[in-house]
Image (cartoon, rainbow, N blue to C red):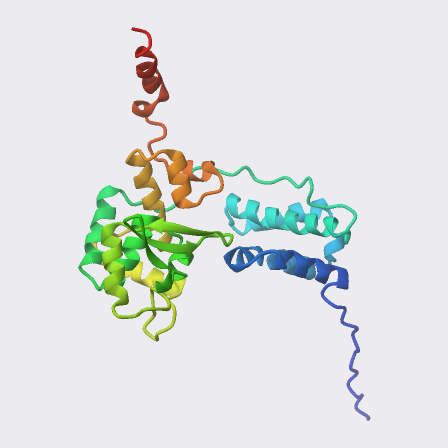
Length: 304
């Protein structure tokens, strides 16, 4: 009895994408940089979804894209997240059409979820924010500087982590810090006196490099910043799940509660859409702030 030799099947493995598709992907992502490019790299989630279904990118139909969106929703993704993914996909196909790599975009008329413009993020009230800053002041200068910058300037954690000592300055009597915003926009922001003092103590005699360093001497990353924020929140006796974004949320809410005009808060938070800023306004439904009272008082001055 002879044993049959194993038969090795030779399977032709097709490339993941065609040359035109790879060109479109590379060209589209090359138009972005830094954190924006990182965000648009989420396009890979869609390309993997297509590859799992042996669906070429340039053979995708509108129904396929909407199917991808339904899959995201089934996995519990928030509507805002699904909408961002669909915007990224639509941008990719628009680029392919503009570069004459594709005749028309299958994402042109894709239905997108209605975004809930109500913030459901963990919020800190004025007393909790104050307690957090006090707890930070009782810790190391490093902790105090980080918490102050996040809570009193409302920076995204990536913006704070990207801050360099060389970009600290003085402008018309204001201590300042030049940062790179989302999308690569470079802006100069003022520092509150307590923030400036905390940063000075944190950097000590250093004259260059990152403002915030990890224990190994490298630039602190967002995960390290998150650990610092949680540590200080526990010290302040706050039982909520506090993250760096919680402090940004608290800054925006506190600014609106303090009466800072919406346009100024939008500028400070670097929100492209004012509706994003409005999401943080917990008191926007208050009748005490209704415009009718301000208008009535204003007109009354001319009606005498």
